Length: 612
Image (tube, rainbow, N blue to C red; front, side):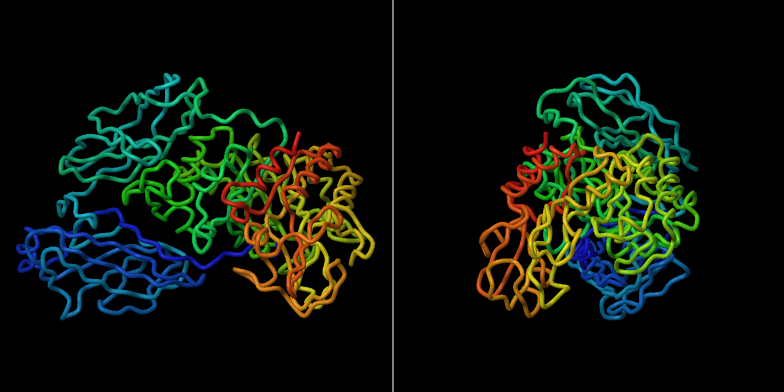
């Protein structure tokens, strides 16, 4: 898809957990500071892809003045401070230290000071310490190490409403006092033994459990790995079965920024009850491996109670935040939904060439990332969005016609019975992209293909001719033969791809030109029509009222308003396309992407109700 790119991050605030505790204050200041407590919080103030702006705020929450302060944290090896102000910032490897300057060391009770910096790289700070203690103002004992991580819990005796958890003990130099039991990242109990029975659960619901040890000084250690639990029974608010057709939507990691579209919106719109699968977009492909796309959006961002699926605000010390935790909470409410992590997309497909050189190593890296203990229960498989194997997209690939098949074979071998899917071109022209790759040979390894039957035409051809970007069929005057849904899917089937492994694609957006005088398709233009986020593109939820439908062509709506000309799908055209998909024996449908729909999910409803 032409506009699958990362958007710049917006504002983000988190309080960081404590790490090992080492006293940093000198004898003179230590006595004064011992009577006070303080917190240090980090805020990402901006993000421009290759770098970001950050700010730390130190607040005195105690009753005595603080005479000086030192904040420490760790960055991943690919992230650094490039400049700073209002503090002296130094580093030793990946460990960073910020000390007050002369004029802002003293902090009165209830007051706070801040310092800022610019950074490079994608990472986020971790292991925060303030004057040698915890950044959340909690207890600390200099020279006393926190406990180790307990073993990941195991589950037994699962019923409709309860589960018994057991885990191996943590170790500590002064002794372990007790354990916090975390359900879906929130503490539900503190126990002195290495087992706990959690009750009062909902039947037929997914949960995730982990544990964390506390030592005799009440210091907490790292969180254990997690175990996924699905309670028996069902009923209640669990959505009814949705049939055997795939009804899949893409959720973009960057949608939580400027678009302010969170996982919770899937619930409030009613869309979550009408889909079967979600593709989370995107993970990166770099150095021949799968990699995190946006760590802050994926697992760092703290959601407030009103933004959260569960209705509970994220806390600074929960082991998983961000979109991943919100997807976990969504699955707890809608256990029928399966979630795949999609890698690549328009921007990051250039990395697949290196991946194809060693498919087994690539598959292993993807498996390890998808199954990271922090979020292993969130995902049900992997989706590959290579645009395009042995052809050109944003970059050109020359891996050969067998590269895609070999890559998918390696992923299937590694992921076993988990879902393995791929997004594909819809170029049905003679000698086009479908012909350049062995999609038929690869189809034996995938559960289905998401055939991107949209973006056939758009304002990258600035002068036109105007044409619907997602025609279902050919029509008189279509700018390029084979650039339509019916021809693309017919070509896949003719090559041997089973119809049930083909999903029709729907765009929840329109593409448009400006400088157009002609209502009907085929008119000339002067360039791309203005759009909210990008010229030539606009969400359906905007277009339905800003530029209402003028007519339809080849199963897709078009609209001419003023000098602008747009094409987009509506509930009516989507239902017609779903009826066509049913008649072709297709496996279902998918769409790009949730945030383009109305607040009540009218496009998702049309797609879901139209499939049978």
